[in-house]
Length: 292
Image 1 (tube, helix red, strand yellow):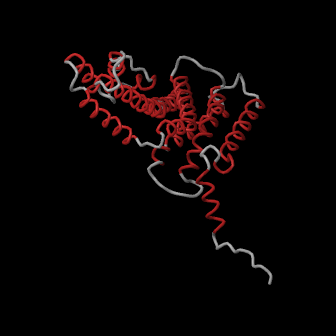
Image 2 (image 1 turned 90 degrees about the vertical axis):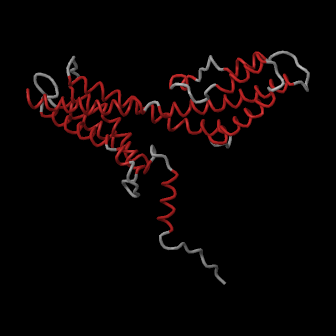
Image 3 (image 1 turned 30 degrees about the vertical axis):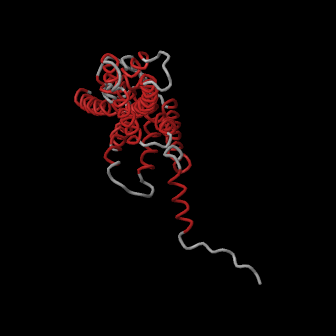
């Protein structure tokens, strides 16, 4: 009897394609579709720019300058809408992943489009201000791309299958044991341990989190204070061992906070500068049409 080939249910191929798309990165979405769109746009605009003869020299006030300026301004406004787009869930060609992919590559294409729009003429004016702000937005966005591609794995490796809540609970458990273990100590030694326990674990500022620099760490100071040689069963040795465990747990939490800060810090530049860019772009457009 001839074997009957397995039949896939109707729509199975579409489901498989959707699953494959779900596992792809926004950078590789639809086989780098938006990268190709951006590259072709840059090549075409550059080819036209260097092939036309504009007198006395290329600048934003020529017909081609106005064309590139209109394209660039439209792109900037559209790219700024990503934050609004994130609040609306949808699938298909304009899913959030597709929009993000277009946001990245079309945003990078602005380097070429906006530079050609200026005709390489920059000065101390609102027009150059808009250009500089745009470049700052793009540079911070490049950092954001690198961060989101590389840092999540480092975050996962540091957690060691622990959630943030589990790491904090582990620290609280060690603190409870330290309080009990420190009771037989003299007043000065107990105060050293209490100072470590009372220091705010999450009170560090953004810079300290980014650099993972905690020179005033009370736990490290307490561990140094209990660095002598003690009997294995002594209260001092139990406190020293618990302080070492607390320091290791703090190090894990602080590495977690550092990676999280590195993932988030670029937004403190990207978003405010984007708002400033939109304001400068508006001033640029109004001044061009009013004075020119």
